[in-house]
Image (cartoon, rainbow, N blue to C red; front, side):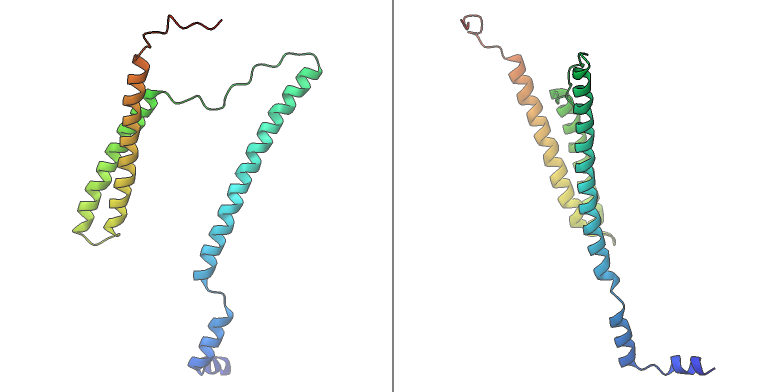
Length: 154
């Protein structure tokens, strides 16, 4: 019974002193997330290094044994104009959807509407950029130089 009475008699000063001893969760969450984010980034870089190293080591061993290794291919194929067209259309319509969400959130209680507005502007303009690239690349691909048959390197 005395322990309950002792807990009940804790004053305000003692409460603040006790809470100062415990680390604040508000400080720990950003600290842990920053450390974990940096750790994951370093791990990804190291993992990529190890996979490339193992590929080169495999090729080296094949050459030492007198075998011809297969040609190295790029990991990602280059983007074609059609890829940019697809991405551009998707991003433009995603931007339009976020813009509609912005106007809906203006009239309701919820997350800040400016987040949707900024997201709509960024994603929509990225989509427009992809579409412009597609138009320029398609036009450039269709153009053939008039003097291309006359040019020769001797």
